[in-house]
Length: 378
Image (cartoon, rainbow, N blue to C red):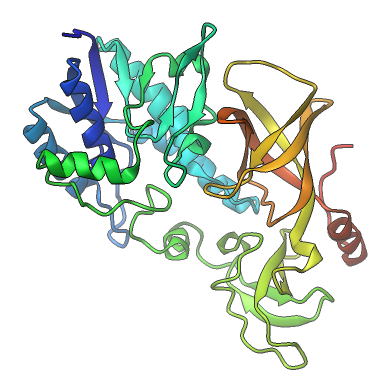
């Protein structure tokens, strides 16, 4: 029997529950911790954490492991949620789940567990982390539909050494079957989707509690006003749904897409058709590129994933002064500042960074003519 102590982050969902079950079956001394990351102070925002904790208690009773609760709400607010709000104010489209993994699950939570005597921590992420040539690497999960390496690219190799991912070799279907075979109450509980703290709330309605309205004009690419918006923070580049533009006189009947958000004028520019050139970029710049095992490079042929569950595409990553530049082999749709570009060599995730600026000569030419500002790195 393995007497190593493993603390599992139990969320109440099936993935973390099966992780705990598998580890206990393998002979580890398993305990569960429910992470309280969000404090709901608004009666208008639906928070599921109380029900999640009850589900976690039930499943830990079934598995016969102790469950504790640890409160990381202050860390979460200061290191994740405050940045989420700040990024939106700057016109960015952030991914707080990535920052949560970096600052909470694999920093505050990991440190907490090690301090109370854990040998390892475990989560229900669909990734693999083998130790090769003395370094712990981050590999995609075998279930391509559930692979979550994108969300963990900011975790260090050192922290991965203390982490266990029991689901990396399994498919979601297999995980649910294991849960069902063992009678777990959450075997067929619906997966949570979207940003963790938004939960069942509608995204823009959630943001409205913190930002309110900042009305501005919706323009076509020629600068003609065709509508109004309630705030640039409610839109992201490439967005099609929820713009509020119907048929426009003199325009063809085609879908509208967000092409530009200008903070100075508070104008939102939209264009028609998914193939419109203003929606495409030949590359992008990254800030603070994080490399999981600190293996630096000046020039790398690889693949990059510019949003979760998008297809990784071939590219070249170059170091430019103190920044990194990604050049796609083929132009990509809706490269969005604030989102993360995650770098892969085969199945291995080597790191990534936050997109600060898209690269598109057609977009730059258009922005110059319209008098819009954009940052450049060269």
